[in-house]
Length: 226
Image (cartoon, rainbow, N blue to C red):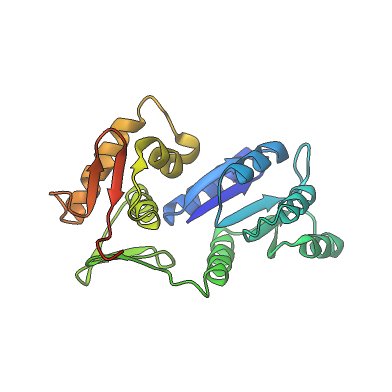
């Protein structure tokens, strides 16, 4: 699951990013309206956490533009204001939930889980290939009925490959998706290869029968049943 956080408070942005990353979500960030729009129009997000008070375009204007462009990602709005009029305005513009600052990270994570469940209530959370099963809601991976412990980045790599079964995914795309703001084009190839090697070991896939290498491109999960 990929989440965009839009907030100009650097300390809070870091705290939320850390909390979500610990839950194995892939996180991107933006600190102003223009950067947020560049992110959203350039990629798909499962959830957007959007502060109301931003430099340039405020959260209301960003939300209005998103819904105008038919972008239906759930939006959780953050505000330091307690004014009921702001809540009403945000909900009328298409916000899915509202959280007043200051808030606890436990409450934020609960709101995030609820919005993601609502978004996926008609979609199976299970991604399967052979004897491997990944649950996008509970964030766990099972092989032959046995739980497999993955790091957040290993989980994100496997999830992204499963979402793109039977498609060769470049190392660049994998790194950009999994590393987000920490993406470094100078080291990404080695990082991807190391993480794929560790992921294969944990999945007992040392021969590459599940995650295959596509020479000169990157990696692919091939589903023989499709």
